Amino acid sequence: MSCFHSTQLIMPSRAVLLGRRIHHVIRKQLLCSQNKDQTPLSFDAILNQRRKESSASVLVEVENRHKITELCQECLRYGNIQKAYYYTDNSHKCQVLIEFSNSDEVQELLQNCGHLSSDGFPVRTRLLKFAPKKAMRPLKKSFSVTIEAPPNITPQTQAVKLTQSHTVAEQMTQFYEMEKLSDLETRLGFVVCRQVEEFISGLYPKGQVLPFGSLVNGFGRHNCDIDMVYCVPEATGSTGQLYFQDKNQAMNDRTLVQRILETLGDLLHYVVPGVSEVQRILRARVPIVKFQHNIVGRECDLTLNNMSGVHMSRLLHSCTQLAPALCPLLFTVRSWAMAQGVTTKVPGTWITNFQLTLLAIFHLQQCGLLPSLRDLDDNKRLKTWQKSRLPYRKDEEFEDVLRSFFEYYASFNFKSKGIAPFSGQTLEKPEYTAMFVQNPLDRQLNASRNVGLSDLKKLQNRMADALSLMDNAPRKITMEKPWGIMALFTAQTAAARKQQEALHRRFQVHELFQEGKEAGENYVIEATMSGVKTTS
Image 1 (cartoon, helix red, strand yellow):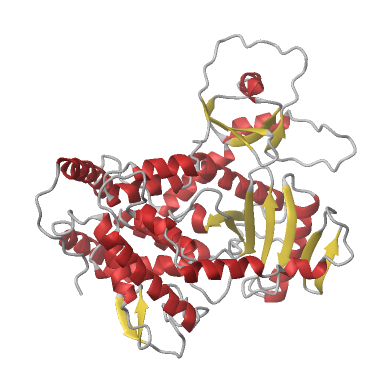
Image 2 (cartoon, helix red, strand yellow):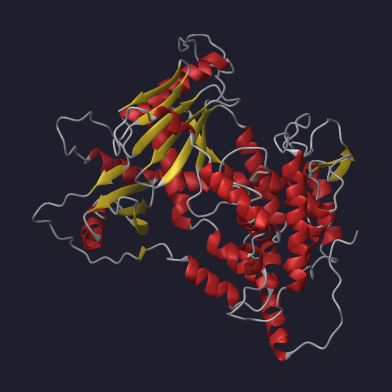
């Protein structure tokens, strides 16, 4: 099957020619991003850079935005301000993220911080509150600080921008740019990881809390969850003759991991500022502590010493660097899947965003736009692939990639075939499941084992509908009728609407435990090893 959809040769209009010129510029910028003077940073280099930024940052609550000048004046007493961001959290409180030149300046600032309340448990944290005194000493020198605010992109402005785009490719690029994580959101995610790391550092100062998943793999969208892992380095030998005493327990012992996470859950719940709604999900295949960070406004998951998420994030990030089409394609496909009821936010027998990601990667491998994941660790093979790919693939269009994605999987024989992104090839299905997508990190596992047969059929039917919709959608700019990917997002079949209505009628697990509670009363349900407990 041809990877790209053939187009009919016709005389294009002036508007179409203009759209193609704009499309060519956007595509050229994306495809040539790797050829800039500055080589793109590797995953580990980005991780180290972001961690360095977070170590030199503090997050400060101010009374209102008019107090930011006074805050900056106070902070300049301890060092130089490199970056400053302003935003309003979910409680409508004003927050300012300030990055200093280095971490030493932050430590000097923290040494001079006090506690507002003498009754509470005193904690040292880089989450601060600015309470200016009536008279502040003026600085001897003038200063200038640029305060950056997050862009305010509403669904209405997003729809207008997409509708006014000239081509589907331009729509996909615009949609990706509007939906991806902002610099502020990424920085806040790393600040949360740094905050958790510093609270655990008393156990082992060399331990690190590393983010993984959407925050760092290149596929993060606004307000995505913050996934993090507390990783303890292997014990090191001594240069002398003295050694630390320890409990001599293996870190891979599941019971030990559960008990440590339970303790960390208590620490987060009772001590760490900004943390609420702590849930200990300890009986899962990978035990985690889930919590809400109110100041940053994000849901967080913390696990212990499970580095597979970091390794997977490194793989996915490498794919985004090699294939500029991957992020626009995946952002479009994920939004289409959610609009059509193919994916939901709750787990079940339907396909997940991670599985869609593997499908997109495998499809680009079939198109010659990505190497096999096995080749990513082999520089010689990777360079050979890049040399053979570049002369032939400069003119691929995002619309063709999107169309061929739907076309490829709408007719794929999932009954007898599976896909293997690690090798970049299809394989004979090794097990009796509806769908087989090989896990790139553990190739004995099926990453799509949860998908049911009816949900797989629905996925393929929706893909066939999407192809038909793209063929019949208007090919010109119109404000009256959605076109391009806007048509994919807004068009909803009767079956999709019926499924979403059914989901709304489903009860939530916590409703089972609400009996006897007064309306409006606040309480938290926590999953523990001994069962489920409700606390007021």
